[in-house]
Picture 1 (spheres, one colour):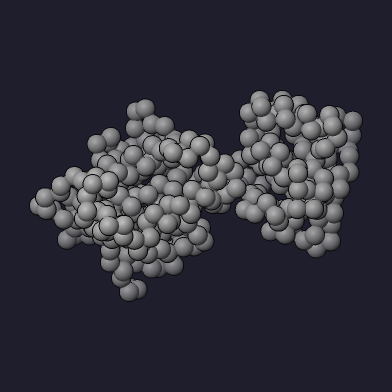
Picture 2 (cartoon, rainbow, N blue to C red; picture 1 turned 60 degrees about the horizontal axis):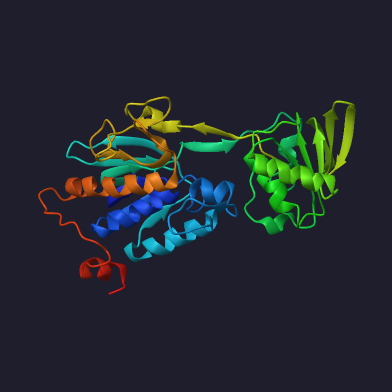
Length: 341
């Protein structure tokens, strides 16, 4: 067996909810190790829409997804959590003496008294459109997310899709791109009506082009894209483009989580609303991965779930220890932990 890393709590998933769980657990003196399939903290916020604004985080009228991740990372720094990135948890087993053993797909082994699943909807990957040869362009000319808007400055962009992501990036990238063409198979959209109206307004002033149809072929040299063929109502149209952004949604997969013996409900994990504990005592699920009556898939809901989970986790890690509820605004001991006393 590989060397075993021991900690109080293993958190599977380093998105916003997993990060905030570190804060709540840290206030109770619980040490955390986070494991994530991505190469950095932030989950879907960092991977899919880092520069998009979020409007429903308390006290932040507007904050970018990456900005939120940065602030959460700053907030948990006093608790010095450890991370393992680019890893999927392949196995989770209960130990005879209590606690759990967590093993990654690289055979790294962790042991903890508590496991918190904060893996969003599970592992996710963008849906690849059925365009012959698209794989050859991926990573250089074809992108399924926008991590840095500057990477698209001065390019001829072809954006494909009819949902919020396609419309949002059409509007956000139009000011910095050389040209923008939006392609959707019909003139009706699933996106916000306000975004659709703004897009058509830009089309009327010839600041972008909207084309009805579907991309059927790509042309270029090596991984460098030159143009795309769009099959429209009046036949094939050749569209010059150096970057292609297809937004066809995500394929969400539970992956190995489905094999861990937990009760499932339509590919998510049922929990109670007192502790957000799963069907296995000591394993909790918070954020989009869980389900209970009235569940709302909001980041702020996940924050609430993390706070209650932490109280229950403390009882498991330190049974018999009296827990005194304290406020960070008035507790000098909590302020000392945060380095603000």
